Image (cartoon, one colour):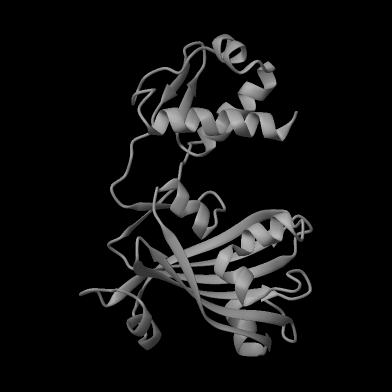
Length: 241
């Protein structure tokens, strides 16, 4: 199944859902109608719909069709269930993004870093501090660790653009799994120095370990967010017993 085709259909349907062409709770056109509209196979339509289900835009109902369950959010929304770069999240939320690299260095993991990140002692790492801006506000501070054996030839210039785009399009790395923990933590001196925190003295913190298709952890990131500006969302289903 050509990925470009189902991805194009997914994007078009997603846009129509977000701009109100298909209203909340409305049924999407039938599968047969979509096949004629997009001049494609049934499997291609089903793949596009499956991705919309995964992203929480629609719900399939056996014998009834596909219902739009999307409702826009007022706050910037970051996904928990999916793996999404900062730039991708900003585009999805229709916001202007910018990234500033505060620190870029090469380190070797000692026991303290190993305990914090999960990388083995002695692993050669890139360590970055990156400040993310949305619509001109400094709202996210990332502490990134990347395994040099996998993420080769990383530069500050790449880090200011999109590391995931570099990984996928230049190094051809498949980003497969990310294990995440969410906490609420007191601000640190570096948080206070760089982030627009207003009256807040705490942050929403997401720590993640990310793996490639070989099962190798190539990234550990601690992402520190101003708490009132973000909403993390997931789409959960109850498994049949």
